[in-house]
Image 1 (cartoon, one colour):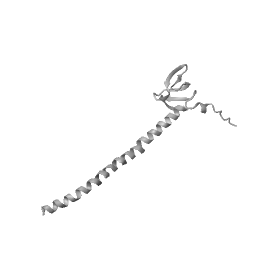
Image 2 (tube, rainbow, N blue to C red):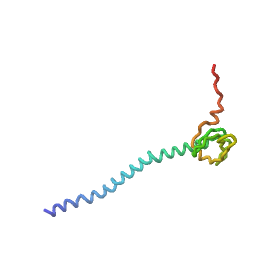
Image 3 (cartoon, rainbow, N blue to C red):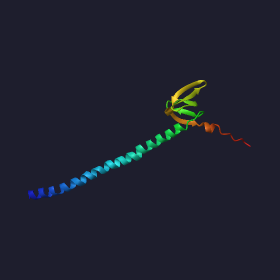
Image 4 (cartoon, one colour):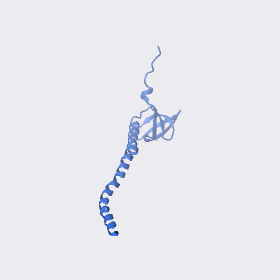
Length: 116
């Protein structure tokens, strides 16, 4: 009777090994897909939007730096820009440190509508 129990147990173990290897790979693939859509893809989109915003910077734009300084751009070069943070107080910062554009120079130059 003991011999029959051992014989039944060894027959199913060999077939389960091959299927178990592939089924253990499925959760890892699913985790990678979830990480891609929840973490990697949104971060790439945010980086692309920030790069486009930095490329649109012009003289006269009102900005906020990543350090929290508010100011108006007075000069722009390839890697740096000069920002006026108070009357006759100008600082030079790297273009990548701009966190947000408050008011674009093209918005401020639009003519105001007169009330009739």
